[in-house]
Amino acid sequence: MNNSSLVGGFDVSTFMRILQEKQDKSKPAQVFLNHFSALCFHIENDSQAKNLNTVRYFYEIKEGSCKCDYDTLRKLLYNCWSTEYALRLTANQDNNDFLGFAVQWALPQAYYSSYQSLNAFIQSTGATTSSHTGAIKKFAELVKNNKYPKTISFYCDGDYSDLKVVNIPSKGVKSSSLSRIYTPEDAQGQIAMLLRGTRKELAEQLKKDRQCSSKPILTKDKKVAKAFSCKQWAEIIKPSTMTTLFDFLYRLRLKANYSDVQMLIEAEIDFVEFHSCIHKIVSYINFIHEAYIAKSIGYKKFNELVINFPKHPVLEPIVLNRWQREISPLLGVEWSDCKAA
Image (cartoon, rainbow, N blue to C red; front, side, top):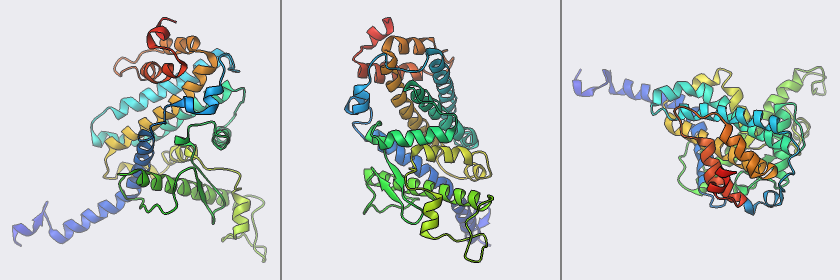
């Protein structure tokens, strides 16, 4: 055989087949990367994303309105921040192979850091949640009632056969789950797909749970139904239960516990970008909740929480920088004043 027909020790046809197999195996992971890239692009290209004073709910929060005790807030936020630091420490490793193996831990860390900041915010309003499901439903309720910036106020509702994406343009937007993100329309198309995909996966799980229960949906012949009608799908996943960004994050947290994570680890994708996008999304979610809490307890008390949070020996002060550069100006406080408080 002519050596010119060899590529990496294989003949060209064998090499192309192996390459195609690797690309096929990487497609599901590339879809997840595209979803995270879309969310990141959407946040970073919204000029009003961090201008919370345009959000009526934030504008109307009064200092002293916090209904959660200081120590509970401290524990929840410190848990949130320490998890975010762990996530960021991994993201700072500029080694694609290392970051590929680290995906298994990054997905749960992303969810739990976001969840703890959400939980702290919910408790600051006087509400309580005893489960992840309860917190996710509360987030959906707050989204529906316009308590969040429009940047993350998108959701999906409707039954399995008639899904509707709200607060993100999707009609007429042509996008493939494997397409890279170059424009706002690309990002919007990806976000619409991740919402629909998350809601469909939730519906399939609810169907499985129902059909394995003591009260499954039956056919006319009294057999456990395998296919569902539109009415039966509507019974399984009620349109009033919205699917939001937090459902997507929770879905990925669960995937990290099962065989799906092996698909991510073995994929040939840009894991540096993957981890970077994950952290930016978590940072934005935490920014919102921290700002809401800071306004309700007052900048002096929140400043105390930030200053007393143990400093990381290696990483830059993520929380301190966010408080200094992004949140305190929203409260009308210069950093020099906030530091001295």
